[in-house]
Length: 256
Image 1 (cartoon, one colour):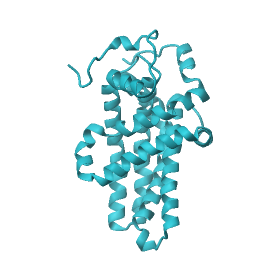
Image 2 (cartoon, one colour):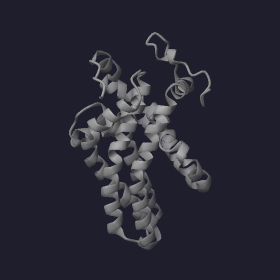
Image 3 (tube, helix red, strand yellow):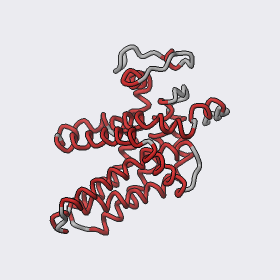
Image 4 (cartoon, one colour):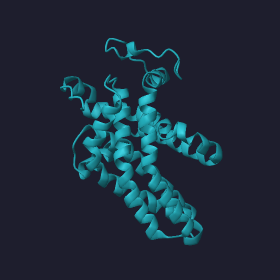
């Protein structure tokens, strides 16, 4: 007996009707929870150097340490976040090819390309977090604090579109950022809904920190990432015709 009742591999059939809304999200969870959980856990491990470095920098008031943590920690986290996006995209498009070999192949394919976006995003996020943590020292007013929070939300919103693109296509960093910004604006209602999910998760985790920390090995990064990507996926599908392209693509050979 699994964690989710009525686990049914027949749901992977292309003839099965696709549900919508919460029933669709539940269908994905029942079918692919273990692949999603493992990818989320590995993504969490990849983010540990960034989190530890930024917390250490904030505690020691070392701005250079914050920049270094963002640069190195972000580069380490990038490939794992990209592989998590690939796993979630497979579930959202009902790709029956899952498992460790598929995850490893996706990680290898995009690892090198994910280093620079991860490092750049890590530096920006670490800088914003460090300044916000020292708001009183820098004597920041309320509008400046709000601007920093909005900046972090904007960065999260861009990442919702950047990592899936990197998992799907080979594009330059400039093109990835341009596409992500256009999707952020063009799909703003979906972007706002996804950011609301992420913001609620972060605020609840901070409010009940001890409880959230105890659950972190279970919730890791899949819990906030899945509903957020679920909300923006229709915009990605509309822009890139993901499912049509993957239906026509030849099957990749298995790893040996």
